[in-house]
Length: 297
Ligand SMILES: O=C(O)[C@H](O)[C@H](O)COP(=O)(O)O
Ligand SMILES: [Mg+2]
Image (cartoon, rainbow, N blue to C red; front, side):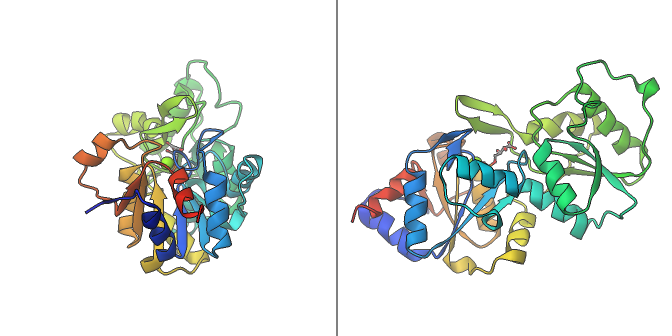
């Protein structure tokens, strides 16, 4: 049964109850580069009460280091080792779970942050931000040279998606035996400061259609993200809460991990979604700013 937070007492009790706070980013802390009202105050208050604060985002466009730059720019205290993105989790998955051999590489549909995390895990790659792939010219299959060392295609949110990238990925996935199809995450949309945009799930969807095959998705709700966090940070699930704006990623992720869950209605999920969904968060409130009620005391 979901508890709808409303009174000062509700917010005070919630903050007292949990020692570790995992925050989703898009739709919770911000919309694009527009900070959510109350984000800085609430995070500062939690840190002042010696709570552990971690950031867990499916947004694969930035690496942990470049996310640290965004946090700094927005005036939010955050340390690179507190930031866990699906780009990082995907690089760890490729190196530690798939164990991509050193003489193999991956074909990337995605942005610089994903490339940076692959580099940090020693994974060779092609595609991504390569100018030869970032073209609106028609793809000429007759001129394409297949790299037989490509052992996986990795697909993340790519704001410069095009037919060449999809065609090259399709060649690797159909012509390189055993080529893995990996998505950083499956979010269908994401909240920008001015409205909704197609998310990473909508970038890999054309390949799923062409291949009649879905990718392995590494981001929330998959356990991989939590495994990456637990490999670096010790916390007790019983006193940990996941704060997110999307039921089928953030709240599912919390439930799969045995965490408590707080849904905020400031991002993707609406009241109607909540009423109709079989995914039931432990708590719900309008936005992160509501927690300021506990600060005023
Ligand atoms: O890939 C996407 O669709 C977005 O980057 C994703 O929705 C945002 O991730 P969040 O911070 O909400 O987990
Ligand atoms: Mg979100």
